[in-house]
Amino acid sequence: MKIAIVCGHYIPTMGYIEVHLANAFHELKHEVKVFTSRVIPAYVQSVAKLTDNTPYEIARLPASFSMGQMVKSKGLKKQVQNFEPELVICIGVGKLFPKPIYQIKDRKFKLITLLGDNEETYTTGGFVKGLKNTVIQQTFKKKVYLKAIKKSDLLLPYTSSTVDIITQFISEKYAVLLKAKSKQISLGFDEEHFFYNEVERNEQRKQLGLNEHDTLLITATRVAPEKQLEKVVDLLDSVNQKGFNINYLIVGFQEDEYGKQLQQYIAQKAHKNRIICKPFSNVSQTRKYYNAADSAIFMRAAISIFEALATGLFLLLPKQQNISHILTSQSGIYFSKLTEDVIIQSINIQKEKRQERAEQAKQFSYINLANEILNLSEV
Image (tube, rainbow, N blue to C red; front, top):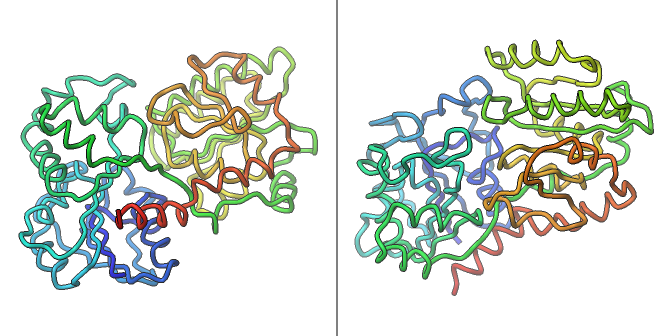
């Protein structure tokens, strides 16, 4: 099948869903072509590079407009039509980029739109603020959402809260259509890159200076203020002062002011030597860090959650709707509030169940997700 993936930004070195899906469809022997812009979003410019060293073609169009995450390019419609795809998958409606695809008349391809909006998409400090009244939402984005809902053959929300969030800024008529066309899927991980390996675990723990019985908690994410890592650092220092001896590895520091501030904050803690800070790492190194750890904690939704799950880690996640579909009682816990007890629970896990947790996580592999999308497209 000829599959076109349309998205405003496409960065093969970052672990976003559009990259993983393109890789998975190619691995399943389909002809894949990505249509995107030449733009790198400002928030990842320090760690992202545009490399098109992929086994499938990437068509990068110059941006005719770019502001924040919004981007437009002229000629998208013609380029996609010239490819003559059988299936077009649009990702990132809020970036405006896919809009021309929804304006194609008498199209001969199946059109699917992936929707990832959730309670953190329009937030500051974790609260939805003025969602219905923001100028950007009303002036730029809403029209594209309405076209996507109306013109797509199928809508695939990939968080549990997506439909509820979008419903807040569209009419009842479109809300009914949104719900009727939606089939819930999920984010996931590439099982070629994320898996549990005992040898890697032992080697990486030695490099980190850990012995066999040391407990290691990890967070691998782009280190930024909204990740609230100070809360984890504070509680970890507190429980260690009570004799629990938990080590904490933070992976994802960038050469920016906030990263320096967080490291200075950590340096003031009594048990600062139990906190290990590492820069943003490539996929292979991140996996090794996960394998070295015993459990992982995340303060908000992130693709990294699925990658950690793939290595069999026991996860500590906040109780919120957009990630409520991920954990079972064996794979982790959801916490309503981060407390010392939550941190302590990272010790009380069954380490011998790790391989079993890694096997269970394979339901979220992108190969499975790609097959699910293809099956749904045939309905």
